[in-house]
Image 1: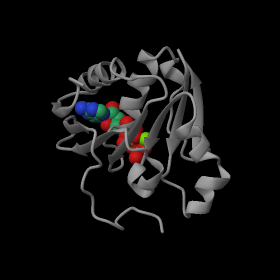
Image 2 (image 1 turned 45 degrees about the vertical axis):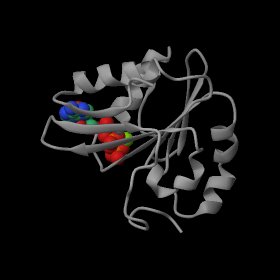
Image 3 (image 1 turned 180 degrees about the horizontal axis):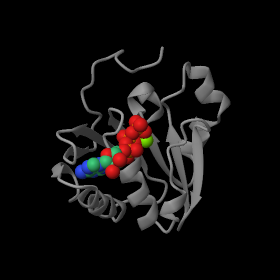
Length: 154
Ligand SMILES: Nc1ncnc2c1ncn2[C@@H]1O[C@H](COP(=O)(O)OP(=O)(O)OP(=O)(O)O)[C@@H](O)[C@H]1O
Ligand SMILES: [Mg+2]
């Protein structure tokens, strides 16, 4: 797990390189949970990871309205965005538990909206804006400390 750690990327390109490095460490059915404000780079990183796993990066966009996008790489890649989820029953109705527990890679934006969905063995990636082109990116196996209830749905 040599990708774990804290990074400061100074351009989108540097974030893409980090995404490729992270993709190289993913085992089958891996889950990555992304936490970070609007525009912090969650989708940018996911695009890089999906591309490295054999999907077409041009297909990767935040599934804000659809909640889940699927891309086809060396295994299916589920791109989930919890931004618009309002209550846990929507998680059940969309079959997100089955997706996260099933085959394929799951990449979850706004995972702090519903951290219970994220399995124990997931990577947690926290992003923050440090400047127009600078992002602090922390990759960990532990859920980051975030203010309970800040983004979480009930
Ligand atoms: N170092 C950097 N790393 C990543 N993105 C960067 C960097 N510098 C600038 N950017 C820009 O920041 C924006 C990040 O947008 P992105 O859609 O990836 O964010 P997001 O976290 O998915 O936002 P949202 O919560 O709205 O889905 C892009 O326009 C990207 O070009
Ligand atoms: Mg996004």
